[in-house]
Image 1: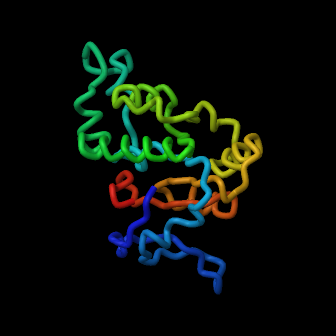
Image 2: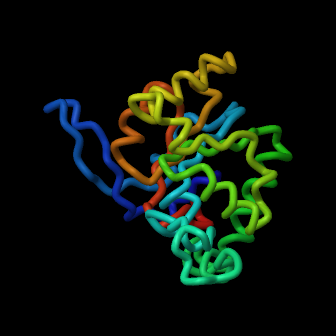
Length: 194
């Protein structure tokens, strides 16, 4: 994940130390990426981070879930509307391949249904670039993504500086701050500049 100052007007939720609250202030992307050197694992959110939508409806991928009598997954909708088009999918693939070449493991930590995530990634032919996919079924035993991340770090014997969590929602980033490095994407899916 490369940080760029090209997104200097992107808002970022930062703590206001004087009042113990949080406020949205414009920050360069480089300041949104915290402690990235030495990262061994990147934990990506799915909806709104890898995808360009807040949800990929299951019926788009599984006709038996109300898919209007289609014979298979709605692949063209998924690529164009769910992931922002072929060019963006190519950028995601290139980023994930680059991380893999560097020896950095990519994982997904999401409240989306694991079956939807796995099916979408298989259609896009990028599923093999992720080591683990933790979906709603896996996060159900944890109070938050942050508690799942803590368990992930503990189970793998990683240092907080060796894990980067990428999400589009402020609350998840705030909760994970201090557990690991964090990166807040813009909320419409990771951009090439991010």
